[in-house]
Length: 178
Image (cartoon, rainbow, N blue to C red; front, side, top):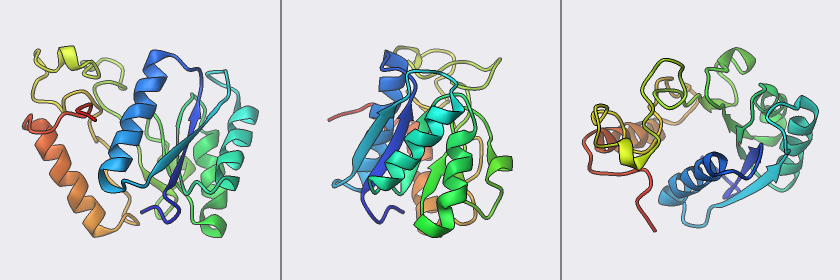
């Protein structure tokens, strides 16, 4: 869906969990767009709506037309929603359904949630856990519990469904290289 081949990532801190999310997002994007670049802006906070808004606007000014985050406020989604029509920018919310801040049809392509992000559910982010009791879940990544927004083109939806089925079947691993 990107026109610029640039995605933006608003990151809290450069710790392993956040770096893993950036790597996974980058690998996913490059699997369908080898020219893809992911620009990261660190806000050095888990929750700072002002910095998160500035980071989002900075990424949009750098040409990012896909934005995601690993911070805890809804400001990234809200900022992208404000810029969606003027800048044709899309977002992927983080860890929870933030669709009320970008209701359909909107800039929110989806809200990745699931076993790694939903309280009380099994964690499956670790490849070492992928062969454990949750082996029917996508290995090394999030479930796609939230549907893709209807604004996401049908071929993209079909591709996501295909890859998710391959992950669940163990044919594709979210962190297989390069």
